[in-house]
Amino acid sequence: MQTLVTTDSTPHSAARRANPQAATPFRADHQFIAMLDSFRRSGGLLQACEVVAMFLARGESDITALAQWILQRRVISVEWQSRIWLPLFQFNRDDMSPRSGLAPVLEELNPAYPHWALANWFSRPHPRLHEHTPADTLGIDATAVLKAAHFDRLRAAG
Image (tube, rainbow, N blue to C red; front, side):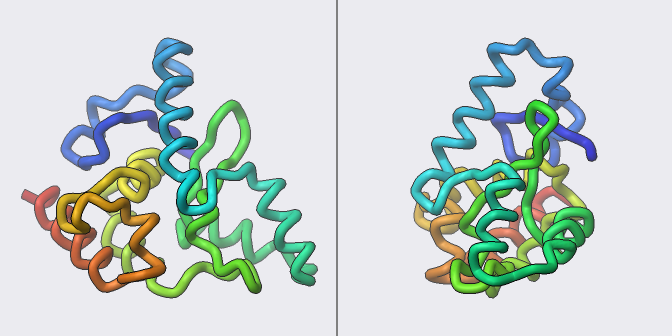
């Protein structure tokens, strides 16, 4: 899994992003902590083992679905210090399935955004969402988040 750390979520800057192992520890730690802070309002950023525990607590016995979602980029995940982290906003809390409206947004952005840039895109205020984050907005207005994603993908294509 390619892991990139960034403070800029635009795909144009992807080539300039540093791999966390190559970045200075202070800078990489700072960027990860910023992501933790930004996802706090929308449910947090949890290690995969914590998300698995939530699956099991809701009666889901087959956790291979989660592994497939991660591998197929049907959910947002980042690797940090040899662990997989997932933003909780993207899951329905009742059954831990991916939230309605997430799939079309990921279809727009996955081709243009590496894992870290995608997570950052969802965690940062967006001008087309009245400076709310896509993570905070997805459950309220998935159409607006999809439009913002479409705009950014088109802008990235140039």
